[in-house]
Length: 116
Image (cartoon, rainbow, N blue to C red; front, side, top):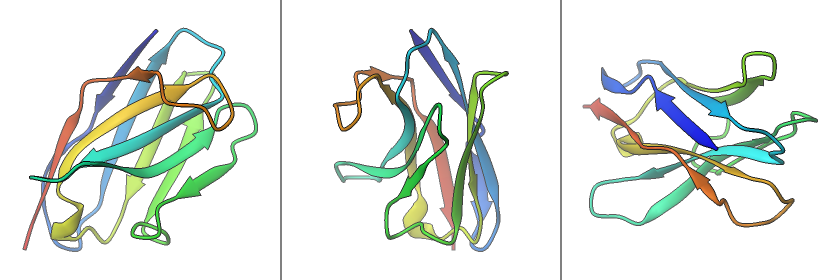
């Protein structure tokens, strides 16, 4: 199982950015995003159930971020709009094979920097 995240970069406040996560292997229940802001613990951002496409978001990103997936391409996306400096951090793609279970599979992060 491998997850490859991409799409990070340096943007300005109010800009948009789309992250991608290519997934190899199968049997995932959910594939999600977490982020680690500078000096902070890693926190949940959003997740999507792989088969049903049900989405869940952290309150801080609701109405600004949209998570989706293309099962044929085995790729999951995080569309981020109206970015804020507080969205700055390393974004990690992760997957779990069980409902409510821990995220057992992690990709290398991609850095998002939002300048004010």
